[in-house]
Image (cartoon, rainbow, N blue to C red):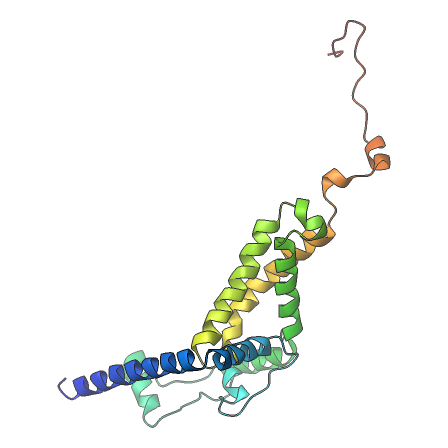
Length: 209
């Protein structure tokens, strides 16, 4: 136990020093910091993922056919705490890897979801009377804020797209519905004339029931 305490203190000290250094850099170079955040944010809308210098390889975010081990003794460490050595369910891994090669969400679809949700939330066109502005704003704003807060405080990683995969498709569906669907109040006179007429009133002015 005594041997573990200095390591914990050292780790806490490193995190504190790194945080202090980052805050100093942001205060000294705010425009450079904003450009870096904007660059990382817009990368999520690219058609295909692309690795930049200093980042983890893309295969780290793909299903593997072999269990990845990153440091010596990792398999023993896992076995001591999980009851067995780490392994891969090979048939399932092959299926998921093949699925991942085909069923990937292109970045422009994320952009469409965010844009549609925000435009509907602003009440553009038919969205103003759609009754869906609040719902569109909820999903679009959450997708924007969650991902923006991540890239503003962490090194970019493609795994951070997962929240947008959950939030922006509903934003797109709600936003496009609000922008395209015609509200019921906009029914044309011809449509209104086709509505079935009610029963005629009786001679005494009351309905014939």
